[in-house]
Every structure is written in C-alpha cells, then in structure tokens.
Length: 160
Length: 190
Image 1 (cartoon, rainbow over the protein chains, first blue to last red):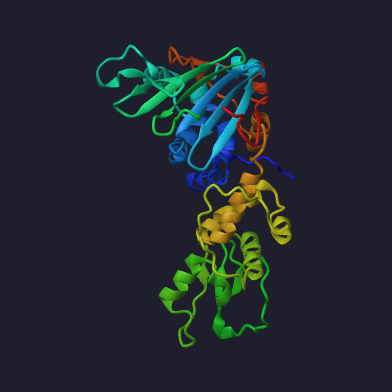
Image 2: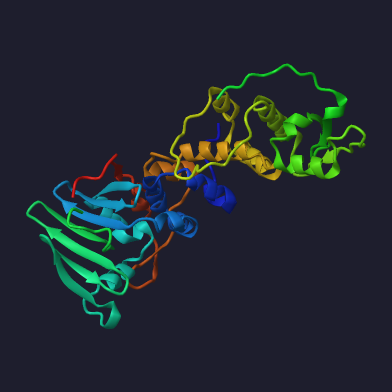
C-alpha cells in the first residue's frame, strides 16, 4: 500500500487545511525538513506564527539547545542536540520564520535614533527595551544555563 | 458520532441522476445531496426538488465512477448526521476517528488524494476536512526524517545566512537531517 503523500504537490487549499490541524511543534519540525516546506509554512501559516509573543533560547547542560515559544494559549518547547544543530547550520530564529540577520538587527545595540535599545532593570533582572515598538530582550546567565529571550515588553516580565 | 436511521423508501420524485466522467449514471437521493453544497445549490437553482420539474442528468466531468461510488458510500453513511458546522477547528489536535471512517479511508494515498479532489469539487466539507485531518495525523508527532519519508520531501539547497549564496547540503548529512529533534510536552521552567 502506498504510504507516501506528495504533500508539496498538493493544492494550496489542501496544504492549508492540513497545516491547520498540526500543532506548532509539528510545524517547526516540518519547516526544518526542507527550504520548500519552510517557505510554505511561512507563506500560509503567518497568522499562527505571528501569535507567538515570546521566544526563549536556552543553552544548558542538557546537551541540547532549547527553544520555547509562548503565545496566549500555547507554550511550545523543542530541544535540538548540539551536534544536530551544528550539522544543520540552522539558527534559532530561522525555525520561527525570522532570519538570523533580522534577529541580530532587531537586537543591535549600536543602532541609533528610534531603534535604540535602552537598558533597564525590572525587579532583579536587567533588560534591553526598544521604545519604538515595545520589544524587550534579556539574557540570563548562570553556571548551569544560558537563556536568551526576545519578545514584547508587555509580555516579558520578571517571572519569564 | 452515531445517528439513528429512520426507515425511508426512496421514490423516483426525490432522486436525481448524476453522470460520472466515464459515463456511468448514478441515482442519488435528494436527501444525500444536501451534504454536497455544489449539488444542493444546483438542485435549488434548477428546482429539481419539485416533482413537476423534469430532471436532466447532472454531468460530473471531474469525477470518475469509482470516486462517485466511494462518495455515495460516504453520503449514505452520514445521511442522518447533523449538518456539518465549520466550528473553530483551527489548532484542533484531535486525531480520533470513527472506526467506520478509518476503514473507509484505508486506501492508497493516490486514491485518497483523488477522493479529496472530488470532495472539494462537490463541496462536501465533512469529507474534505476528515481526509485532511487523516493526512495531518500521518505527520504529527513524527521526527523530521520520518516526515521526509512520509511526504517524500527531499532536502534542498540552502542559502548561506551570511552571504545569501546557495550552498549544496552534503548528501550524507542531509539524510540525517533533524532526526534528533525531540519533543517535550511542556517547556522547562524559566
């Protein structure tokens, strides 16, 4: 019995309907299968991806890179082994449809004018904020783990 | 979902004839056609639900007799089901199906895709949605390498993120791909 589905040759209507039923975790893994699936998901699942408000990247002693995405209703987590990561030349932001270059540009501390990041402290944690669009980012570093978090300042509070 | 099936005997007045692309005629109960928005609209426009109107056979040029037979089987099974409501199915992760549906759709993928096309052409939302959900169930929870196998996806050329120049992936490493991605039900505490 034929078990292969030629998914990429399906009409967009069908692809869209199938993707609707997949969880974010499945979308991330599907997007990593090839450039075509990555582009497809970016093109027809934009509304779902845009609901992600915070993305957290973690490097810990678990020998994997942890990526967590948070929306109002979903908390998604995937872990990718370091060796797999290096072999794929895949950057964390790319799996959520944002290029690595854009990531660095968004967080650049040397930008000027309305894109400038301002350092602030909320309770115990130090952040960088960008007033123009309310973006916030921070890095957490300890002997056991390293986190890099980016998202809306309204969403990132001291507890997250 | 199960529905009680009242006993009714079809009469010539409440049937229409549809003709498949290979010329085979099928007699369809008007009650069954309610599940197909295409047929229901056609019947309404031509007033085929009236007994005093002559009913010409309806040609279905995109559907073969084998597909039509399969669709009629679906329509008959769901004859007394409530009207399909497209609720907020988005982000639904339920991949539980009736036993009958699992047996009905236990067909090769090429046949399932043809059935999907037919369901789309006749606008039978319950069938269309069910087939898509079945297809999604074959993707969910799988590793990248398993997905590549199921969907027949080949790793393709990637652009270097710094230079933008296309780079050809090493074939041996692309076979392994992201197979070591693991899923966890919940994120670790921050």
